[in-house]
Image (cartoon, rainbow, N blue to C red; front, top):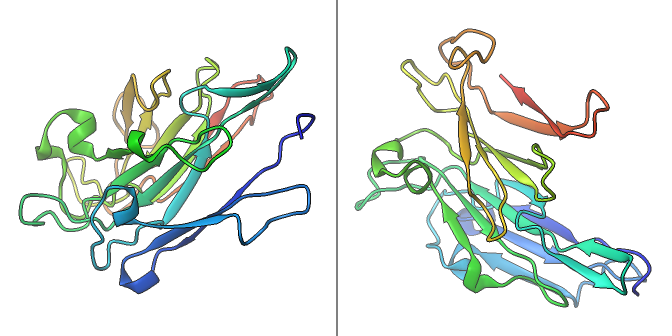
Length: 229
């Protein structure tokens, strides 16, 4: 109503029809209203509905492109975006890279659901610049967490890939995608145990990135990232 923000609710059903789906229900001053909802499968957002892909296995919300809805001069609320993890998505020309994983990003709009024309489909191949990074069993998107790590007013996205080998077997890792004016991403960083000073040392089957959480754990005003190993 112009004086306070009303949140919406995203719910996932990764086993729906053995493919997966996400339902988004808009909030109102009367609470969640079922009539104000949309039901999205992979095909509805420009993807391919794939058996056992687990579309919606993980969800995370953030204002990745830094847009706001303002009422007057002093009252503004972020327009949030939704990241959807599909860790069992098969990739490659013949889907030979089983369970490589993918993340779909839907960008929110004022007075509506999402601008589906802007939808991002992010894989390791897209991010790192070569399909060679889309490896079987990586489970890219198994966990997601959003926070403004660099305090630029746009949220960033951490993506867990616990099946990443990193020179061993299922050592795991996390890719950080930095938010930008156009959305995710203008910079990225890959984190893995034992690489570039990340503790602890590498260990087989440790599955780094199986769980993620964001919070201001030290009270500095910066978002911090907890990574489950």
